[in-house]
Image (cartoon, rainbow, N blue to C red; front, top):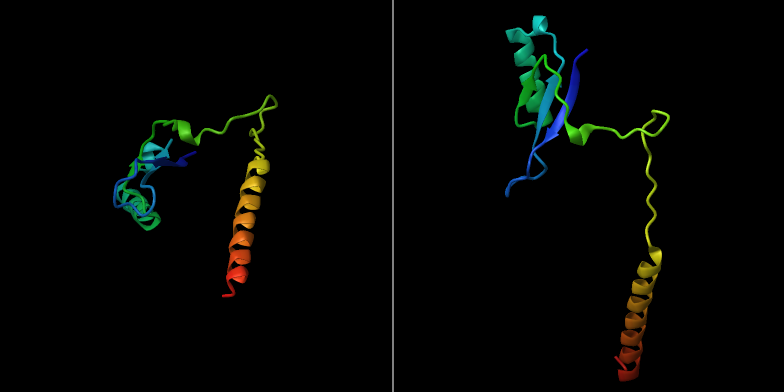
Length: 109
């Protein structure tokens, strides 16, 4: 069965979003006719892809690989932020704002 993948390309200076190529691999050679190619080109164009690769070969794109855990399920990673530093930054900004406010009231503005 054919697979649809995305191959991200390096960004250029004027790119609004990262450029990419649609990759359709494991596409049976018997289905490659002019109508299929035109249809896939239209899909790529409407999706905003730079082009499309249509091949019967299998193409592995490392960025599209999903790491699996020991049981064969997709690996989930939970990342927690270090909010202690954030809390310190917020408290510093509050202290600055309070000092400015107190200064304004002292000057009578």
